[in-house]
Image 1 (cartoon, rainbow, N blue to C red):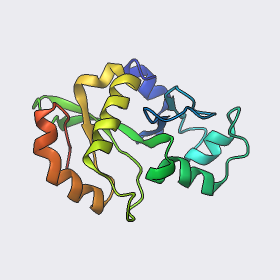
Image 2: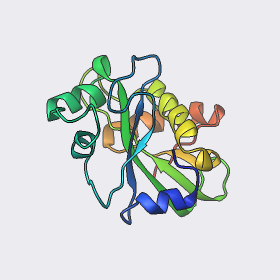
Image 3: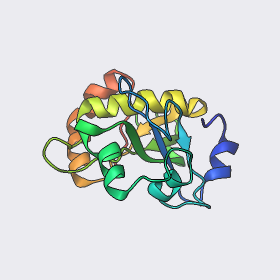
Length: 166
């Protein structure tokens, strides 16, 4: 859990940090289980090597990671990155500072980002990074995600879910 700016600074490598968290209504699976994981980017740059250091994740393969994080039908964990953009104006509040978060998805049929993914990611970030809840803003990570996010940005704003499109 990220409970303060200090928590974020302790894990960041100068850019952002990666996270993993459980998909709601899916049976928990080790090593993530029901917890939110933010990895120390100074120690592990990528999710898979990080997961392999945890109890229950030692035998995970790259294909397992793809199935567990990127593929909708088998997804048990949300994965992505978070970053504090201290000089960026928040898209809804207009105040300085946005806590940008991304979702890793696969740009293939049946796996592309949908509006409910953004809602689920927002709920996860609200729970996992409570110190930043008022500054959350989804930041699409690919052209496909940007097209989807642009199409639903106004709808999500009505739900107080900010979308940051640079």
